[in-house]
Length: 291
Image (cartoon, rainbow, N blue to C red):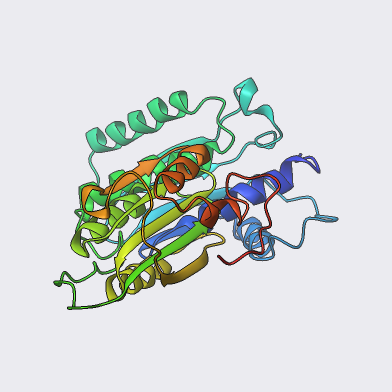
């Protein structure tokens, strides 16, 4: 039986997974139908229903699929999964199914799952990382191709900068930035629109870009079109002249893994206050600032 600690933790991870899905990606609870309906109702009400949660009739069983792929991944969460017990070796039960896949294909996917679960041992969000970081990108690469519209929104159009257009910059933050599809899209869009900037991956996600006003605004619109958890556009505004050590022409799109690297990059550009005054990399900062 799920404890009062385990159930909210499982709902939190399922909610995180659901919010990370892109168009064409699906999460559905599987029968028994009564149990599936119970989990759907609980997940639909999360967050907000954490107090006095009823006891689930059975462990959560869900199916992950994408459009046009014959493979389905069924995941069952053991009753003691999510109570801090991942470190003790409690893992989800994952099976690979598909009416039109060969036995060798099924075994190949099952091996991928097994190897990945071993790598994720001790992770805080095993199911979330298994599905969003490994399985879904691999499914898209194999069945859709990287240019499929189901893996990312339509790419930004490439156009030369308008003459005498204003120079802008933008800052966005999100709960996290992990998806390889999103990271690849950010890199492609920045190149197509001749923007410089960076993405800080992991928790939290931070995105900063700089360039011609029309291109910065198009980039922000494309980012907002993707599915995010707690995405916030901090500002889109005229950029000050850089007082850092390098001009914008010498920079490109880069990725960081630590908040400290974000602060250091903005300091190098002479724009450190734009992140620290919002609470990014500064404990005592005022998060309500909109600079």
